[in-house]
Image 1 (spheres, helix red, strand yellow):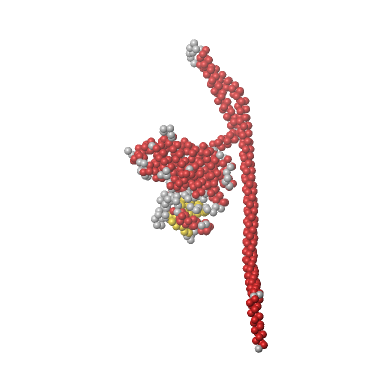
Image 2 (image 1 turned 45 degrees about the vertical axis):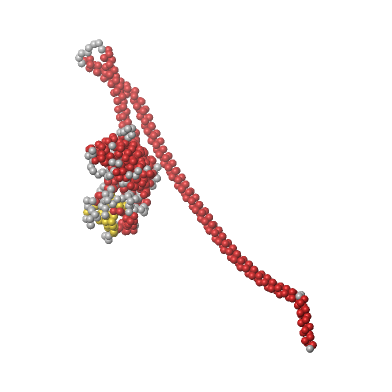
Length: 622
């Protein structure tokens, strides 16, 4: 029993990473158990088993890389009514769905997308997978590009989309509906390499369908730039120049690009005059010798950065990019990258806040990039740089309809070519009729002379001469009879071509007019909406001002009422005090008067007073 068989017999939660090389027996076992392995992968995705999923899927990918034809045959061959291909589609669909976002964060999604490209080597698998995965991949591209945490995922996603549409008209037709999302990713991205990939996607779709740019939401400069891209080896370089001008024109604040004239690692020259691009996450150095190739340095790999007095940007790295491993290392003195700048670029970098980007990124840390030193985008970079000729071939394949139309237009203006075609058609028809006629003569002669023997060659020569003359005469007759029909047919074809061309031009003009009308109406609606919003804002401001005035008046009334109430209470207290004093005085006076009245009306008191008076008088006499 092989080690792979032992591994596959383990419970799925007991699986471990398998890094041993595969032999022929292991390959046969994996191909035979392909359906079971994919079911386990589907189970692992459903129940968030990351290590088992990586182990099982890596086995399939390694076999697909070694024997792609066998893997294709196994995937498409029904087993008990089900195809392993359907399991692969279900697994990828579950992984790319919104519910699989949590599982995607737990695995190296860039590696997974690169593995899917292995299955796209076969055109049949590529077209079949494209039917189910293109929409999910476009959504994933937009999401990962907007999150801006791991630059590798959107790059790999765009690379996989390029693989799907390269040489596949079916996938290009399917993907045309998702061109808006790709355009949004292009205009919103701060990664120059991802922008180039998005431009390549749009360019391939434009070569296949010219209406892609007509209905595009891109700015006019990008539309014209994409339409003028050359279909040759300089395509990627032209894309970079176009994007350079576009980024300068839009004055992107989250993407700074500078021209440098020398990049060195130690005392070794890495490249000469080139361009570098700083974004909030990465530094991209374009390699001028290879169109589209680059060195990507995430800021997590930067140990230190400083500006020297001789206009040089000094980067100390603790993780070396794969393209520089032969001239750099993490040892002291060998991990420094020197970028020689012009004085203008030197001053611009100082004031661009790039050091703040690097510091903030290093402080925050990356949850997606690993510091193992693999710097895996190297393979992604090779993806786009190794295919300029393939792009040309793919473009030629995809514009076959265009070339046919051009050839048809040329044939309209080439009368001799049309005549040659007509003569060739007439000769072919008459030759066929002549052969049939000579065969009929031979059959007739054989029927008439079935009872006699023909000796010698004289009669055969004579018969051959008669047949030849009759065939020639019939060919001439057929040519004369067919020539008017051929002429009328060619005239009808030319008339239809002219009508088709005029109708096509009229349709394109009407479509352009309609698009311009729609854009104009859209602009008017936008302006009207802006005016309405401004009016609403003004009304709201007026209402707010009126509310403030009412609030102030209410506050004033409240203060006035409080003061009046206080004054009234004070007056009331004073009045009550005065009334009480007056009442008390009156009561006292009344008491005194009452006492006097009581005293004056008492008989005893009167008698006493009388006696007192008499006593006083008696005393006076004596």
